[in-house]
Image (tube, rainbow, N blue to C red; front, side):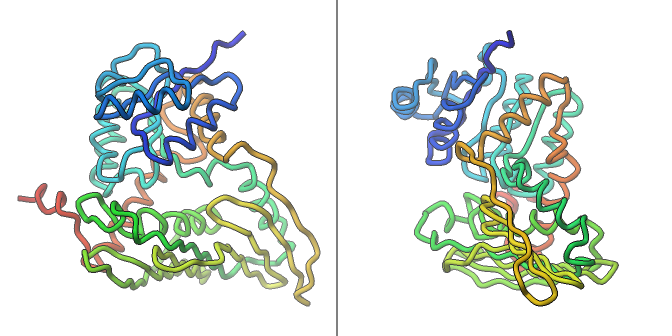
Length: 331
């Protein structure tokens, strides 16, 4: 019998709570520990979700030999230091998206993972969901002909969330929301991009509040991507082909897929399988990778993590958005 996999959570915010609830409903996994920089927050979280251990520092969690995997649920600006701490203590980690604030940080962490042989993954949950395989299979079946154009929209009215307005916390729509349309395009159309054009609008604090990105591929395919933290979108992903098109409901947590023919008549539909929250798939993938001695998940390998961060760095350069700590690191 395989013993239960002990997971520790770094951070006590909303997303940490969703993960805790998810783990508590999974088999062969145990919510073992939680850590916060404020012990009382860890204690309250542990009491609410049934953690055995509650730590008042992240280092204590990283040093706990009984923890098999640490889920990092802190703000983007903290991901680098938190994941670095895990790597230094040889502790496997799953870091919430966006993986880091920039590509230089990501490259440093991935190098540490490889040098130390310690697992490190990114919790971009849509990469791990079984519905992604269904979407890819339908595309590859050529039922819509040759896919030539893709659109992906994701927007929420979340500009009142303080961290999203704060440049010091790597705020803005791109790293929090725009990362999903970008990943959607890469998962379906790949990385053979020839040209990227984009634009954004800004908050008073100087981060992007909504953006529009166009990826032009070397073979002529085009992906149009939109994200926002000030407007509500339909969350649809649409793939247009030479003989039809397909509509994916909710690119942030796949709900369904509908296929339409050349007459715009629906000819097939698929529903996503029942799930706990959707977070269970990334935990299962991490468990499998760690048990097999791998340092990355095949669903989101290190090379892809770095590529996405490099894309977002390029977009922020185009928009002239630099976080304060990036300025400091160059002095």
